[in-house]
Image 1 (tube, rainbow, N blue to C red):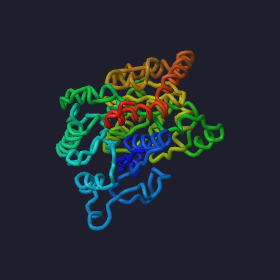
Image 2 (image 1 turned 180 degrees about the vertical axis):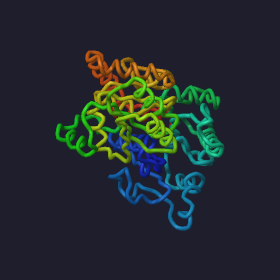
Image 3 (image 1 turned 60 degrees about the horizontal axis):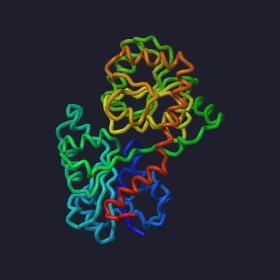
Image 4 (image 1 turned 120 degrees about the vertical axis):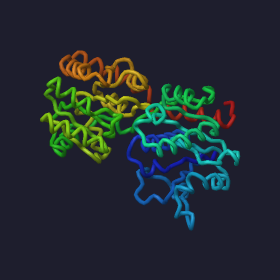
Length: 375
């Protein structure tokens, strides 16, 4: 038995991609390697956590005076606690490990999801870029091993930080196991009624920010005169105002924005869609692509970056800046039933490679390598 510690901040409190990755990783290992003790370190006590079913004694958070400074505890004071807890291995699930951990000779893993802030610095303010760079650079240099969520991310770590590629393992992400199951007809009907939708819409899922490129998707639907509802699910940032201004100025019809959609509704919302489109300019991996493939709907996404790793050979790839190409691809999928069927069947086969057992085994192999275990 080993004592393994996790940075569980996002597992308990984050609804989006990093939170999903953290929760899935912890659950996969608990399910398939239950002989170990897993301790979850959070910067404050979870009151209504997203990750449930964890025994209280396995949730560690600052108490007493230090609880007033949760960020300080998580980034600087945690190594001493890990040492006193006799942790064999610590896994920073979201791009960082605490500063000073190497001084305690604690074996560590860091998962790096992306280095987009270095590749596209114009999308981030100077302060955020500086913080992200300091944390990720320290983590990549001082972690025992690095998990990259795609070959694209591995290449970026080598390019920007000059890390020896032999220190980096690519372990793909999965998606919530809820997507493995077909929703009942009743569930689908209920969700359509709840959100006042009809079957056969185009679906976009992701934070509404510039990098995700929703504006070009809306432009493509408008210029291509595509007579289908576009359902947009995701947290809105200031960029959403830019998209909505275009919609209002051009009198674009049938664009529906949904926020804070619970997971139990998201699954049937995927499965009812005619197709899924993810025109993001750059990602570390792209979990929504997997969610769509598991939901047995065709996927259109971006060429380059990591997208083909997630989408496989039978998704359609487009230039995210080419409005006409995006529109033509949507029409092609909507109008060709044989193409749709082939994309659904082959896409689902591809998604099955990202099952939770394979991911758990691959992560476990990284742990063993970090600990110097031969078999």
